[in-house]
Image (cartoon, rainbow, N blue to C red; front, top):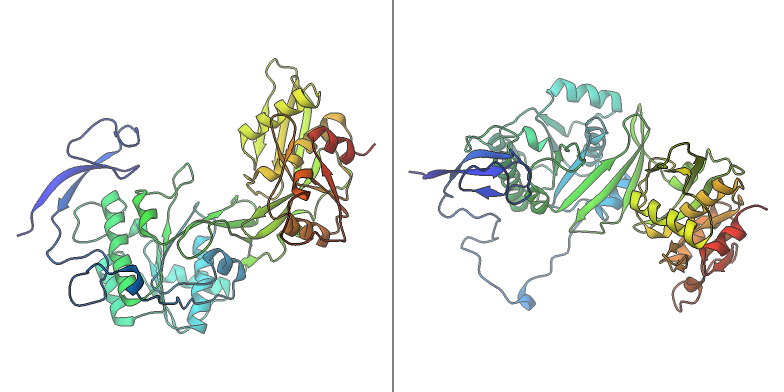
Length: 460
């Protein structure tokens, strides 16, 4: 007889309590505890396959065989880069994003490619019928005899099909709609999401089948369900972008098999998600070179340099409290740069509304974009455009000094490739020894303070 007991689990953080409370002591949220029935684990049941008939035993590190991962490379280069070079057998990937952002579209295109090049793919549709999935595939031009669609929501049935088919890849859309008959709670609850993900993870590790799980997101943009779900999987990908804009950014939040700094950029079209091979050129396509309040920042997203346009607007306000509005950069960073411009450069911005926007819907959190943001604000305030052939990169300190940035040669090469002839950089970056040589087809101007940069960058 299986023993069971009742406990309360927080739907926000997954913390367990023995009695109901109004406020979760773990995360501080109110009215988030849900009653769930906890069952004692079956004897001999292990979370992960041990690889042998008997129980696992400790091994010296030197005696553990170093197996090389045979990744499955993808022709979708942007997705291939974010995954770290391809799909790892037995790996579990969690893909999150807002509704309608393109998660199912991207995974359907990936499933069709894997089915054609590697082997059978099992696409589990828990929210849509098989006919709906087929209609989407027809719209995307996806046709493959080795792509199988399973409209099922019970995890035991899904694992049974995995065992019989032994597919090359499994996609579950979505994990919040899957339930286990061994649990009494409803689908989408904390215990169901956690138990179903654990069951799929065990099956994937045991048979070396990679699994992609689609996850819903909360109003704050984080993946819904217990945070432990992100700890259980190997890779967490976040698909970002505005629903009414064409561009989508696939960002790696966690990756046990590669870098977490890589991003992939796609354009949503009638034919599905189309790769953007040269995003810098795309983001600068509609730029007005002689417009005031516009500056070009060179940012690094993982190993890829990106040139983005930073727009700033400074406008006199009739109210006592001026507004500060940002889109694509941290709000507190804007306050810091505004204070530096007022104190160190001598610009009276106390009666100015300031708006800053990163063109293309990108979110830039790298300090190297400080110089472009501050220069764009100064350009709008003084009504003098930034020279069209100048790219800017550098971190701004509280004393108005410029701090060095990393990977300067790669940034300069990307700027030179797109036609920029001059680059304003921190002088300290030019004094670093070693590394790649700076490109010769772009003039590199070193500056020590923000005031020096503004004097050089703004057109007289």
